[in-house]
Length: 279
Image (cartoon, rainbow, N blue to C red):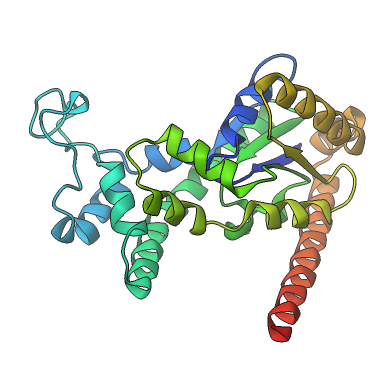
């Protein structure tokens, strides 16, 4: 089974591409890390309790108010397990601080709560896709490179934009509650999408494809179709079925892919360090 890593950056159109791949003619199962990240911090989960423990005392509006429609006027929320998290407030707490050290510490704390829980859910979903006979599954992960998941992917599809100004405009149109400073903080918290695109292409034909989402949805759909043709050519159906029916071969292929990705990452990081050293 081919693991297709789908990534981009905030407001580049990754979610739109995810919806395209979920529908006809692709019908691919999508494992959405963002949706799972919401699931693992729902009221009553260990993630929810851990976030309250670490952030509630310093973030008075961490939970949605009782009069919010999501709370249905109930002090302990509609499930009785607590009111849902106020995600914009948590975002301001983690991304909006002027103290860089404090911001990094808060972000690390939040990631240490959410990421392990998301990884467990993703492994479960991948196992289910494998046993149900899918030729490929899409791992929709915004932080694909930052989290190291790209080493497990046979192919990577990066959704990018040519102009960072377009990215900022889309983000503020999508989330009007964000100030310009908040939006800049969200974008800056992730690896630059143009760096992701460059690193993706180093994997070679079929293993790394970049889709530039600078225009409308129809153009994007056409580019996705071309990208999927390239990915398909690099992983033909017969190869997928062979891996599915012969697990030892699948393990060998996965190991080779992991080592290749590790080598590409190492070469990339060494190049970046050399560039910084020359500045």
